[in-house]
Image (cartoon, rainbow, N blue to C red; front, side):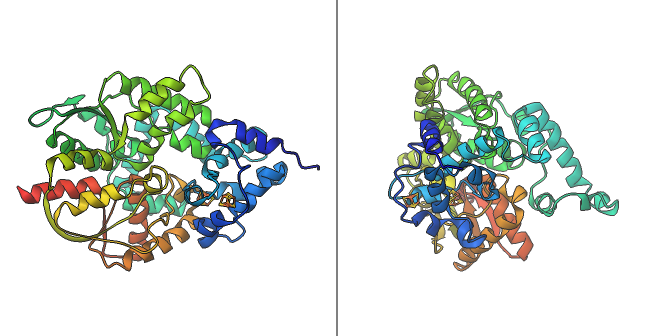
Length: 428
Ligand code: SF4
Ligand code: SF4
């Protein structure tokens, strides 16, 4: 078959690719920093995949299993001297592979991404089942039913806190007033993980925002941010979710939109790009995105105005979520916040840009690869000999907990807002 340039052109035409792959000059830096290449499979080579796209080797590329090994961590894009954003090209290639039947999604993925995740009701039902499974794990084990689940699901059931049933949103007020004078009105994006699993993280975020002078608005109609659908390569569904979120959040008229999940905050900001080729929504999405702040950014603004935070004695190391550091380029803020807590020693691990391998559901669908990447990350974090590992993404918290559980290590993992909240309590 004669290679054609159509593939690279098609990729470049999609605004999500941010200019496509043509600027690549084949330096290989993307491959050098890729966690999949370095820890899982040397034949996974982003430079080669980019070149194949440029050369139009469509069939070979779209049929390749390698396309599904990418974490979308953006390590390659962060380092690329030519600005090629391969983590944005991969979903476009995956979507082509599925639509043109070069690849097939598993039944589990289809049910999860097309049926459960897009619907709050079905997600709540699924979480009830998971909560039931968590409570009755022994029974499931004795009946031999647990053996039917993949290792990843078993491990998740062990490390996740009890799934909230009903979801947290049903127990929260839609408006929580500021303590004292209101400085800002903030709409809180209550993501799926906080709503169903890490409810204490959401509560800590709301409490910190209100105690630092924000009125917090919590719209109940919020849907999944849409990022999982990009990974699954259904951009249509990602846009559908995004539009519902834009409608729900812009109605609040808030000054800022805050998310405490690095993946959610990064993707909410990317709504601007997601709709940039759609004249009917581009302006609205751009205005929406301009108001989005990751919780670490928002707390930095507020704590700058308020001076020192609380008091807590601990040695901790901060793990940078890929969607915080490499997508939003936020890394100083969480460290500066933690250093404002009296008594905290903030340690620095080697290779801080290393991905933990969680990547949404990568640790379910690519379990072995995910664990190999995690091994390296944990090694780097452990070298600092911390009391505690701190991060700011529920996906990373889960992944790190999985590794710690498997290795029987004595470390806790917390979200940065939980640590700061705890420091406030210690101070009072
Ligand atoms: S880092 Fe960028 S320019 Fe270098 S090979 Fe990779 S995509 Fe091409
Ligand atoms: S996004 Fe991450 S996993 Fe995918 S090619 Fe780039 S560096 Fe490798």
